[in-house]
Length: 530
Image 1: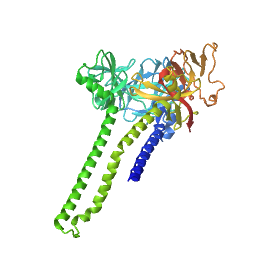
Image 2: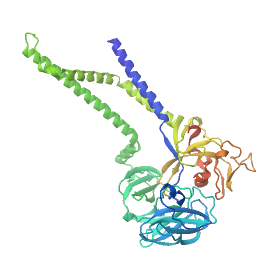
Image 3: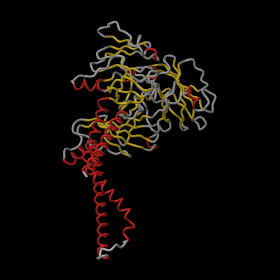
Image 4: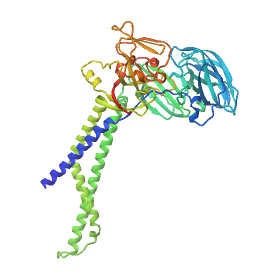
């Protein structure tokens, strides 16, 4: 018996160790995607992949962005906005219907990235509701660039808004900003959006945010549940997503959230620790289910033994062998007994299994949070260094060790790092507060001045007051794809880095969204699987 118990104990410990091993391995493959693409419409240069003919007959010698877009027959006001902060240009907008051979000039004028500029109107009938929009400019250069201009169509007969800096509407009695979604990224794509009347659209989901952090979601628009808002001043955002993919954002400020009574405190406590209580509930449910199964198998088998013994004693007092009818189900009860004994053995070793599972979770959490994690690339911004589908091993130990020493982790110049950029409601055509993991290369360090001019990056610091090119004669310089952008001149704070992608024309990086804070860094990329 001692040998059997020792064997069973060894078996359960082996199972626990196997669980721990696989949990540790799986922690490395908790893949996250590092993405950099921005959305815009399909360009005419990408038509070959769709099987559609190229319908653009606009013979232009200027830099031009194009997009194929479909809108309902109507009369539309046409608004234009540039994509790069601080950018301004003289542009012309053209349209050609799918069934037409005429390139129609909608209008021209000076536009910028700070707000919407109306350039004209366009009447669409049923035959030409689908067509090519072209934005041309002699002052826009470096085609393509990730910061695409946007053309917005607003119905003139049923105007939803009169865009200035934003398309502003009133929703549920509150001021809101309406943002339509774009389409796919093309090599020379124009981001073209059609504003749809929210009263004619259907709500698919409503997300509620407190200080740009997700609070809860619902399927219908309702008043903000203030129980999710703690005491003190807060910024609240209600993001309404429609079936058309456009979003309406309601922003408001409050001085105080929930009233400090016991019911609201309990609600806030449990909702803030929802994941922990969900895990506790699932574990408790499994243990209760195992206990019930053990209880009923014991009862069932005990009842079977009583019937068997009682039946034999009554019909065979002389202790003679008489076959009894219960023998026909003896195999079932033998299997039931084995199951019962297995459950007893399982329950006896349950503490070891629970301890191993908890240890596995801790190891999993440590490896994924503090040590190393695997990410997969999704987007063209690091071509040809890293391409879509490449697996990046991200080393977090440097940040973990420096943090434990009370210091800030500063990656070296030229290192490729993964960081988490919080894209809040200020980003157009992007889900509010959608965290985006990006992979870029470090070119500017804290305290340095970074100047971008004529496709060249110059870094100025105390050691190099005249400046130097951080890309010059570096291993990655042969992989660079350069682009010309408007001038950038910025001095980094003590906790900021300047990050760029190796594929500069298709990279949304510090040239667009500004410096990256040190606390946003996830870790460096020592190597990858391509």
